[in-house]
Structure formats: C-alpha cells, structure tokens
Amino acid sequence: MPERERTPEQHERLFKASQSPKRRKMIQVIGNRGGDGISREELRKELHDFTDFDFKFNLDWLIREGFVEERDGRLYATEDGIDLMEAG
Image 1 (cartoon, rainbow, N blue to C red):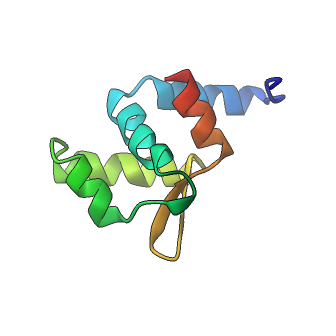
Image 2 (image 1 turned 90 degrees about the horizontal axis):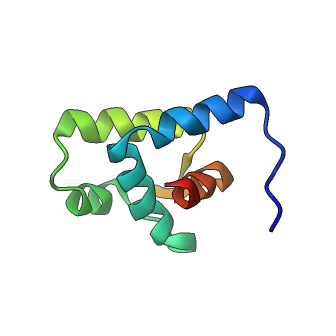
C-alpha cells in the first residue's frame, strides 16, 4: 500500500509520538485490539508498569494529537495511530 501524503506538521507529530517508548507501547496495545477497541480499564491493566501519571499523560496526548479516538467508552487507533504502530 502506498504511503499517504503528509504535511510537515503531520510528520512532526508522528516523529514526536515515535520518540516515546511509552506511547509506542500504548498504541501497540490499543491497535492490536483492532475493531473491538479497548476500554481505559483494560488498557490500564495491560500497562500495569506505567505510573498513573504516565498512563493519563500519554493517553491524553495520543487522543489530543489524533492517534487514538474514544467512542462509546472504547479506545481505537486512528489511521495515524496505525501508521505509528507500523513505524514503531
């Protein structure tokens, strides 16, 4: 599949996200759930080695930057999130 066209801002966001091992791990867990998504509680159990601060900060960052979306209490990787999984 050909790579999508990206703006310089999108490249910068992807680069910043990929530089954080915690964000890479978090997006892997979320993305591996596919279309079923994962609840915050399930994600927290999977990432038991994260501090509460690290968990909230990095999840909020991934949502704000468009790598993860939350629908009906479930977290899903967006197209950018899947790109981050593949890059990580």
